[in-house]
Image (cartoon, rainbow, N blue to C red; front, side, top):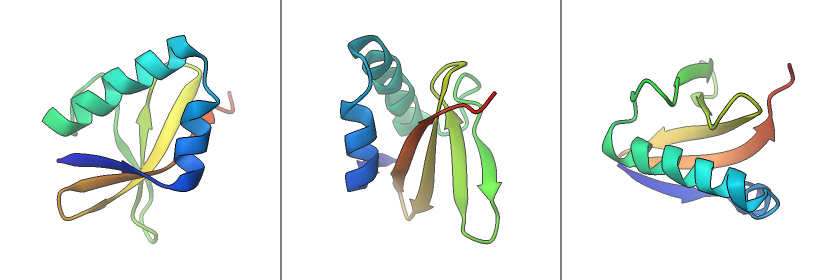
Length: 81
């Protein structure tokens, strides 16, 4: 699997601190190898829109769609809790 970013997701990523960027990079590299890796905690976020959610850490989540062999990241946000 490959990872691609929307303009919004890329902007979200660039606005993260370097520490969180490093954590995000680790999670994205895990998605490439095994999108169901336990530390990502992938789950379906919106069935109708085919949007998935993955975990960067306790504070941040990323949202993505899967098309063919590409995980297209559409947003990186703080977890609301």
